[in-house]
Length: 469
Ligand code: AMP
Ligand code: ZN
Image (cartoon, rainbow, N blue to C red; front, side):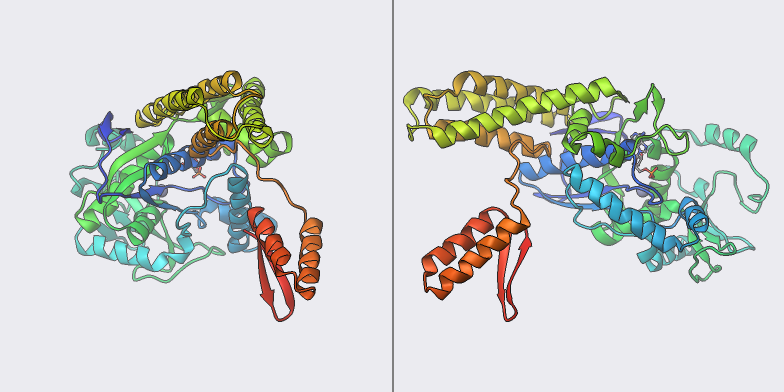
């Protein structure tokens, strides 16, 4: 499997640090608003990377943070007259709802910066002790960039070029810094802002230190993949490398993956430009599976322009998949023949060819657009070869392949049948009656029927309780 590594600007063979395991960190959103569809791009892309790694049998430890202390969060809290915590908690919950709608799996861990302040103080202290960081009179702590000889290795920037650029930009108030390149690790509190005590001053961490610390705590000093949008390459990821490698004396991440931007009218979509669409808005018009399809139908390293036309064609294309899956299911249920015929065995083997094509595309730096093309070839194959005369086993075999490939992409080919609360309660009542009548076979049958629909029953002293799995 090849991954394009921003560090080397090459596609490299993926070799994990530990056989069979992948440690992966993806920079998450700053939570002060509903997420926009630009933020959704890395979520969908790296969730698909994770799904493919899991499909290949890797155990993936996937960590993605929420940045819940930031100027923008504080500003919003002041505007609304509530605490910063209330704002961040609210938008973390909303973000999780959007993620579920886009079928983005919850991370193994979703750390929050404000819960990890001790770790940040301790990493900053180590950097100070090792001479990589220094505090100035007002208690601000800076990272001493020039001391880290490899600074610039990710963004391929040259320190001298950076320096001349910075000199021109140097602002007053930052003149306590030893060098214009140095960046903040800890900063003093301002009136009305959340703060924590530290050896240097009451204050709060800089943004970059958060990710170095959360990655270290949940994944260790060395990780396999670190990912995020391409705007994070510099300075965020460059600074993360500097902090982590100087603190831990280990290579921080082996593979750096970055998605290109989602644009609108060929301009970057961003909160500050105000030209964004939220995922929530899109969900009012489309199933969010359509948004996921739209993202996967382009290469993650190419800019993608959002348009109503592309969303419409994504919707139609996705329907071709779900309709084919629906037909296969129907054929399976209504087939009169059960067993595979010899001819069907051959066709099933032929269908495996599309799996191979799909895998080849994914192995080549996650070319999801080509992987989708393989799925459509399979759809076409299914539409021509699975007929009313086909056996149940054949329809089922093809359906299984289709569902499996869609699942790697996080696309739901066959929706689980929805069961309403009322139906569940009626069945529970029927089960109770059956038990009273000592018809345990029927009672068990109802329990299994509900379980198949994702409903778990629990018999308690207060009666039967149920929940959706
Ligand atoms: P932020 O909340 O701005 O820190 O962004 C969270 C994640 O979304 C980061 O990985 C960003 O790089 C990414 N991101 C933000 N805007 C876009 C966009 N228009 N297209 C693609 N990725 C984006
Ligand atoms: Zn980060």
